[in-house]
Length: 242
Image 1 (spheres, rainbow, N blue to C red):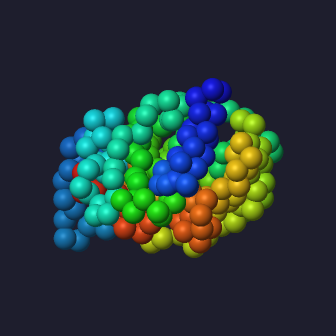
Image 2: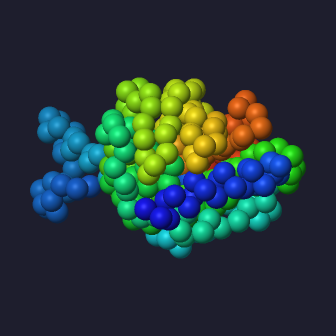
């Protein structure tokens, strides 16, 4: 619980410091089956097996696929502290909002097999933006479930409470055409008395999820995940996973 609260406190203090300064073939081996039918044979062709879903990437693969220094012009990239990515989830009220509450800490149900997090800070110290992202490795069926649950939550959840903070104004946004599917939404957090507009985008590429969020206390219109950051991270993951 303490680690979860610290993430919110850090977000507030980083933006506040800004003066806010600037502060995710299968049939049997039957010999008969191997024989090609004669020209006049009416034997039906064997139906190919559906391709299996992609397995989960390893932590080493995620770290290699995550953004690093110099990957995005105009931004500083750093590793996200482990304490800012707690592994466990904490219940939100109401339960319909749980997938959205989880994503604030880049957690999920089912849990990821491995994760790699980054903080991305604009070099323009007056931007007021705080951007975080995390790559989460899943079996593909689990990744698809997390996305489906998140999409449903953006339709059914308008406000919730989580680890002592309140969130409201949840609204689905047009999702970018990235990866295999994506979900975007915005909300406003009341964190330790500070009203913070936030924007989230989650992209699934194969069995890996990338969660992004951006917050800005100076300008709600700038509380968006920068397209250049999102596109660079998706491209780097797809290159590494390919």
